[in-house]
Image (spheres, rainbow, N blue to C red):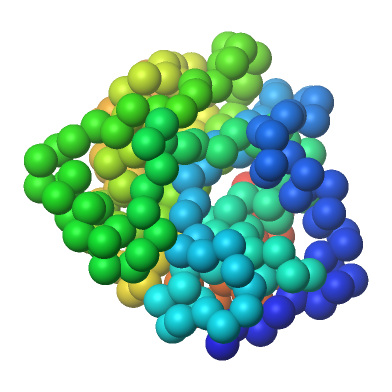
Length: 215
């Protein structure tokens, strides 16, 4: 089972967790890179930190008794270290949490190139200059919900910095896909891809990556 992160680190990120519940942004601005947004999709396969199955453990990190999705945790660290606003990408119709059902639905959506309806869009998108975009790797690609997000938001003129979590496939070709879907944006090629087995210990790696990007 994944290690439960220490209470000390959990408390250091407590302010970030508040935003996950309501997507309320905290005002943030950086002199050289402008205002920052962390937009992410993440889906822990359970909300119960006790008695997780192997599949549920693979999809989540537990901090101070709270279940966070792998990509959600990475987004939390990025927000805490950059002071960014945060937006959780969600479908209008929630995905199932049962592992086999979720995996099958994700594959069916991919085969059909289905575009799930977004629950909400980013408000006042024009105010952001830099967008960290996070997602899990599903079947060697972004979840189809990310296609919906990228096709319904114009990121022209912005810097897009991808990060993802995966079970062994890394980014696959998703950075190229983001660049194709957002030809007017500057898409960073040196994104961060984290194995699901390493997420719980990934905070130092995330911080070092942010520093390499001058954040």
